[in-house]
Amino acid sequence: MGDQLEPWRARERVLSGDGSPQEVRPEISASWRRVRASGLAPGAEPAVAPLTESEVESRRSTSAMVPLLPGITGSLSPAVDDGLLVVVTDTDGRVLWRRGGSGVRRLADGLGFVPGSAWTEANVGTNAIGTCLVLGQPVHIQGPEHYVQSHTRWSCAAAPVRDPWSGESLGAVDISGPGFAVRRSVLALVGVTARLAEAELRTDHAIALERLRAYAAPVVARVGGRALAVDPGGHVAAVTGFTAPDRLVLPPDLSSGSTWLPALGAVTVQPLPGGWLLRLGNDDLEATELVLDLRGRPELRVSSASHSWQHHPSPRHTQILLALIRSPQGRTAAQLAEDLFADETRVVTVRAEMSRLRRALGSLLEAQPYRIASSVRATVLDPGEASTLWPSHIPTPDLG
Image 1 (cartoon, rainbow, N blue to C red):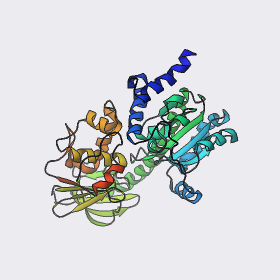
Image 2 (cartoon, rainbow, N blue to C red):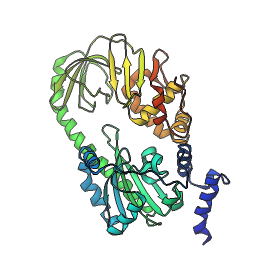
Image 3 (cartoon, rainbow, N blue to C red):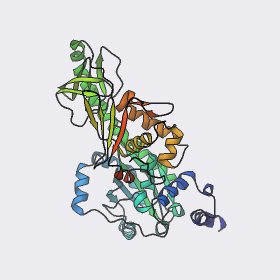
Image 4 (cartoon, rainbow, N blue to C red):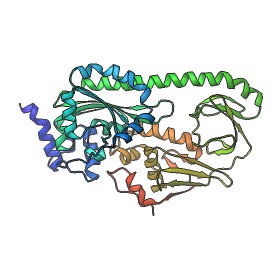
């Protein structure tokens, strides 16, 4: 009996401030810190007002998770047979699909765990869906590890799904149930299911890239000079005249004509079946200005003396850029991990994110420590919006 009560006692001690954060798992302690800093109290009734039915249908119709659903539901059908709830969300943590018996669905309804509800840390506190989307890895949350008291009668395990081709988050796969029904062993099931979904995407993309490579290789060879062929995701299929990165970050409005990319300079763009042909010019102008515009959907604009480039960074990359703009002297991987996750040990995740960000910005970002190049003037527009994007567990940077 004592062993069963100890997690509850640890919860009470830590959340009251009388105990050490080390009494709970590190990822739980860090999540509690983030949630507490956001202003949510353990005894609060979370705000989980769902989207309308039409809004849910709209998100479903455009979700990149749609083609993955048959594989996901097939892999997780044993959990449904065992009386558990299977949930698939979008990248915002919005519940798009639920599958389970009528009994477990009624219990979920009582929590507001319904299609269209936002199951994020900010909305409902520590939970497998919201926390796995923050951490980018599978998470298991058992009873008293939930931050909000009313959710401690549930257990859950969730894993994020990321497009391995673009690096973008697509959503999460979750198994939830009452009491301690979701054992830690279930974590492996959702993790494998998410990886299988990602493998399916990787295979589809690889087939398309190989098709482009077969077409583009002779085209690029005839061009001469410096040129390369890329797929719509920026992956390089063929190159001549120079050493190119494996992937470029292309602007969302790329079209035929002339443009400029921070990683390459001036380029001329021509369409190819399934991709683009990029011919490099002689303009090697370095970028001189970086603007992070938070007036609406975050937009990153990079300019040289005669060209500009626009890109919509992910929420995580927006947070990283805010941290670097705030600290011109730079941030180490451990410092960025503390900034983003309240956990300085998550340096591997930070380095992976920085690798993706440097793929877009090239020499604009420097390392050891990570920083924006001193030759680049970096600014933020409408810093009042930064508080909605900045990690809740640390003060919003002074960007005014």
